[in-house]
Each structure stands twice: as C-alpha cells, then as structure tokens.
Amino acid sequence: MPIEGRSRETADARIRLGMVGGGEGAFIGAVHRIAARLDDHYVLVAGALSSTPDKARRSGQALGLAPDRIYDDFETMAKTEAKRPDGIEAVAIVTPNDTHAPAAKAFLKAGMHVICDKPLTVNLKEALSLEKAVKQSGRIFALTHNYTGYPMVRHARAMVKAGELGELRLVQAEYPQDWLTEKIEDTGQKQAVWRNDPKRAGAGGCLGDIGTHAFHLASFVTGLQLDSLSADLTSFVKGRKLDDNVHIMMRFKGGAKGMLWASQVAPGNENNLKLRVYGTKGGLEWWQEHPNQLIWSPLNKAPQILSRGSPSANAAAARVTRVPPGHPEGYLEGFASIYTEVAAAIRAARAKKKLDPAVTFPTVDDGVRGIAFIEAAVKSSAKDGKWVKL
Image 1 (cartoon, rainbow, N blue to C red):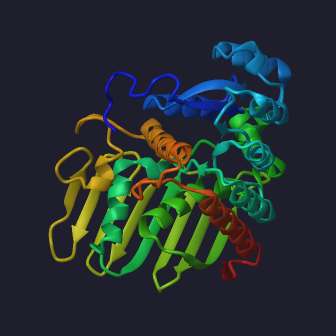
Image 2: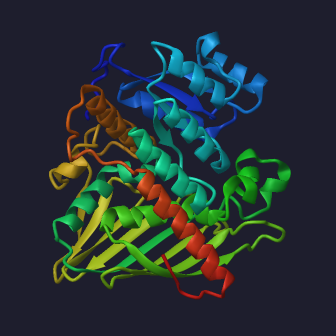
C-alpha cells in the first residue's frame, strides 16, 4: 500500500463513513479520521460526535459535514442513515467504553459495518451479546488494536506461523506509561476522568486501557490461546477507583508461559510497549517506540536487526508498508492499516467476492477474548493472585 499522492478510488467508490464520538477535545477521534483518510478508501459524511448536542453540532460543522448529517445521538443517526440512498456503509465508534455495545448494536441492526475502538465493552456479558449481534447481522466488525497494523509486527507473526522460532516457550509483554502518576482525574483532565470511572471504563483501568493492547499483541503475534492467569492489580494513587499497575503471569494452551506488566504510574515511560517471544529455535523482540525494527536472535547465531521496508522484511510486512526504509512509520499508519484491511473486506462484501486470506484485522472474537482476560485478571487479583482459567 505505497503512498501515491493521489486518490486510487473515485469518489463514488470510497466507503461512506460515519463516526460516533470523537468531537472537539477528543484525541482518538482525530486519530481515526486521519487513519481513515490516509490510504484514501473512506469519506466521512455523517456523525454523532458528542453526547452534548451543541458540541456535536460544532464538531460536525468544523469537519465540514452537511447540516442534515450532524446528529444529536447515535440512535437517530443509525435510523436516518439507513433510510438514505447515500447513507453510511460503515461507522467508527470512538466513544468511552460504556457506549461501544449500544452504539454498535444500533448500527449493526441498521445494516452498517462497524469499526470500534478497544476494549470491546465494559463486561463479558455485554461482549458476548455484541458478538451474537455481529454474527446475526452478517456485517463486518473490526476492533482497532492498532499495533497489529505495524509492518514488523506482521513480520513477527509470519515468522512464528512459519515455525522459524520453533516451539514457543516464553512470551513477555510490557506496556508502561507515566501519565497517571498523579491523580490528574481530579483536575478534570478529560481522558483521565472517564478512564478512572468504573461505570464508563469497566472493571479495568490500566488493565483495560493498555493491558488489553499488550495481551492482544502477544496473542496476535504468537497465535497462542490463554489457558489461565494469576494477576496482581494495584491502585497506587490514593483514592483512585481503578487499577493503575498490573502484573500478570500467564499459562498458554500447549505449555508456553508468559508474563505481562502494564502500568500508567511508571515515570520515564511514555508509550513503552514491548513484546519478546522465545522458542526452541530463536527469539524475537519488538519495541513500539522503535517500531520499524525487529530483533531476531536465531539460536547459536548473532542477533539480527530486521528493518521495515528493507530486503530483510517479509511479504507480510511489505503489504502494510507505505514509505521507503529510513522514514518513520508508526502509530497513525498502524491505525490506517486496520482501516485499509477493513476497506478490503467491505469491498469484497460489496462485490460478493471471496476475501483475500492475507487481509487481517482484529474482530469481535478478539474483543471477547480481551474482555474475558480483563474479568479473569480482576477475579484473580481479588483472590490474592489465585490462578483463574479462561
């Protein structure tokens, strides 16, 4: 998917996209809009961009949406767009977690495909209900675990799948940040407020926000299924309602073992997501803050640095690479890769054609596993780290 500097699609062929949430002051909404535009497959035509009508209206006007396609709520948007001959084909849901399920169900019922921010829902019961709705609808549902869109993550996954690491033994995932080291939710900081509210975020704080990213990355690259876990969740900041630090030991089906650390109270860490995978034939290490390189350590040989865009990158990496080697490609492009993969799936559905098996993106099933992971970790921690099966 190289950048060509021009549209590869006519205006009519672009996928008509709507958005729920993501209005003024919302960081992740802008990220999704940039990602949707980057490869020129979508055009944003409608939105219910805030739960506050005035803010929704201002946000829609700022984005240039037609006045009659700026909605006060997602229910009205889903019903109205479904009746239009030029109605949206897909919707991006970028709200706090408690709105994911009701919004997704409304658009699935209206016949639209759904692209939803993570985690899937606030609890497992709700996740399973949404999964059922997705299956019954026959529509495409994607969950934006954006790190799975990085080229060298795709490279690592292909290496594991090809058996280059041998039998997997160890998986180490970590995701420390420092932005919640102080109780900034008390200052009204928007992103901190809802993430530390159990009614809006669900049972996991740091666990749900970034721990699920680390867990999904480990699962995506290794293909392993989690069997059981032992967790220690902590709220270090006094008065905080949800966890801000997570330690989890994991046992995978087949015998591999793993550990996961996620924290939002680790000074000096900005977005320090890392994954290490070790097998009988070698090991891999990937670091999100240096995303264009993958360290490959074959047993009894010198470690190698594999680089995105170079001859060392495999086909799985190449198909989500846009720019030549040496140029940074990361966070926004990772989101864009998911949007582009979903576009391929939507176009295949439009044409009633079989989807290219190389197309890969997280689905509602991944989301259900993520919520099951959260609930098992919360349950384990409440019982002093007792092992809990999934």
